[in-house]
Image (tube, rainbow, N blue to C red; front, side, top):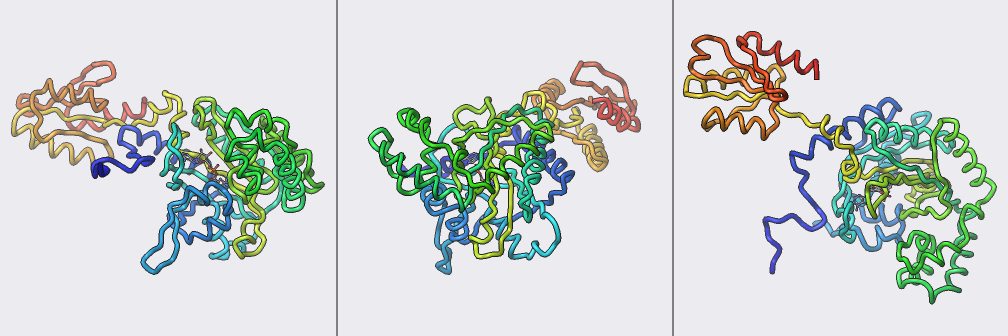
Length: 423
Ligand code: HAM
């Protein structure tokens, strides 16, 4: 049966008006907090040359190998919808010569990413990330500052989480470790799942991330990269930990933490939330000092993270969601043609002064308008009948406690403003 034209593509979804206030709140908080740390927004395009991701993220990763939405455009060029934005940000940084400015360049982005992943709770094929990248410094304090910013953001939304960190080494020490890992995995092929047997050759580090229960006994006995770091990586990791401690940031070292993107060197981290279920990673990030060179640019050390916005919204506490909701300030309930005309005029005037005002064009009885006010969560209802218009006095009903007061239209704005001030 052909897919219905009236159903969205699997793995995508509509974010509906009743959910959107939580998204706005998270985005607003991110913009505020990130600005305090000197981050500026960048909006790279949603599509890029496929090679940017293939080279940047790594041809052997699941993201590039299996999950990208790739197509030839009209000119025959291979283009991909972005599965992540770090490669794009680094490309933009080099293309626009941002490295000419002295010091660190701090950039953030908010927007959709695309990965054709297996469907699962908390996993979409179009999902949203809030990400930040600090470019131009390999100082370990960068890690602490960026992580502190992100945790401050999560704290301000009262989201509980745990910070897991590791060092994944660099081009100097990792090849030796990977060779050792591959040797060990080759010895124990019979105990591994098919995917891990394949990864033994293509990308042995990813075996550490396998979730298949049968592989866990082997994984728990594999050598840890933390024990194979070169002097420089070990020192960098020690300094990062010291900076985190100095900033009062609690962390757990997870020696088998690896990430699904190949550009990481040295620090890698994740933030997990117990409220998310199997897909518990809320944030992933790390250092990628070699990425710019890999793309054909100069050496640009970088560190950053991306947070799954869909997942963040899932774990927002109920009272924070409630705070985010922006119900109409007032519903104008009217009876009769003259009242309708008056209500239209009043609605225009209130809206132009910044109040969210609702009125129906075919309104029905006052009772049904009151019911509607309840359904849409209007904070007040103004009752407007022929008598009220004649007397110039109206009943203003506060929906929260059903209290009511008589008001003149000249005083209405003040009343609403006071309420907004009090809430
Ligand atoms: P990532 O770990 O692939 O890293 O993704 C970061 C976060 O995006 C994840 O922790 C998760 O919350 C969310 N996410 C990923 N895939 C999905 C999905 N299919 N559905 C819902 N949410 C998802 C990166 O993307 C790197 N670019 C992060 C980074 C920035 N590293 C350095 N700078």
